[in-house]
Length: 389
Ligand code: SF4
Image 1 (cartoon, rainbow, N blue to C red):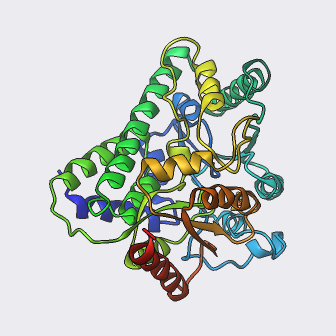
Image 2: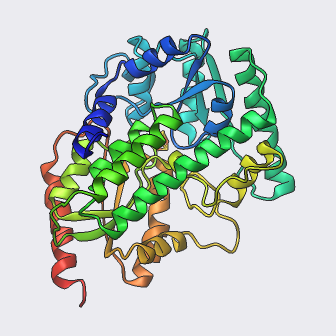
Image 3: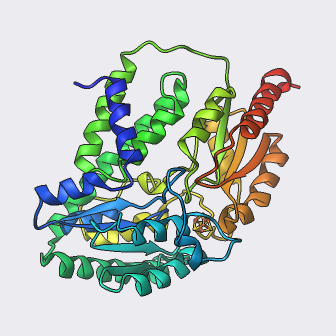
């Protein structure tokens, strides 16, 4: 069995590989299989899996990619992830993918889907419209149609008819994966010195590349290994990180927060890994079960409508209390409209409850960590010194 160090090394190698070598290797092992990329923050991966498609999370180029041609497609005052994706595509880094799914996260991703179609007309390109009306007979009915359409497109891509039993098996595989991700998050909140967020994050990132079964095994192995290992305990400030649900912060930024004295006890990284508050029902109509899970999810996201009667920020406050957090760090990509438009409402809720918060912005290629270290360090010190006043 691999130890913690070996598991994290493997995850970091996947994180660093902008050539998607693991996807190419998977396709060599599965000559009839197809690989389809998806943009953050959510796609129903169960449907791809059931059709024999490897879902591949596309999270930009991080801080390793120089953007040359990607900048030509976008104005300067939007976030970074669409430029780096176009750059990856134009440099043939994504040629192992047979298509890309663009979920309806924001206007930037909507526009990117159009640009992508023009640049790569031979690849499958799907705009996934998720409902913002959460009533079963309106948004639910609409979303079942969207899921049916997605399933048919995956069937055409692979030439393989998908049965309800295939779908149920895939729902089961992802339910199991979400259970392990939940265990990882729970263990980190209970004993944050045992599960550094930089390691938890690398494990989530590995799930954007690996087949779900393999990723579940990796999570299980990490949890076993880390429970058996003694790790140094520090007097860090417990914080919740909010705003990093789409364009991802560089790994160095997460490590900088930890070095600055913060234990991140909850976050909104890669929400596709744990989107549904509840598990997807494994019997009955599987497409209805996936649609219902979307409608009934209690997760609060800047990309999802909050129904009347629910106050934005209540969920965040609930997370702060449930995780025993002492403060909140808003860390959002520069020019990310959904995250930045949500922030005043979330801050108002925190102010009303007397929860400390601070904020900064980043882009996936942010290189200068010292100002972030100073700001996060000061925030952590303030909580530790005066948090009880
Ligand atoms: S980072 Fe924000 S603005 Fe940019 S694509 Fe993602 S959700 Fe949209």
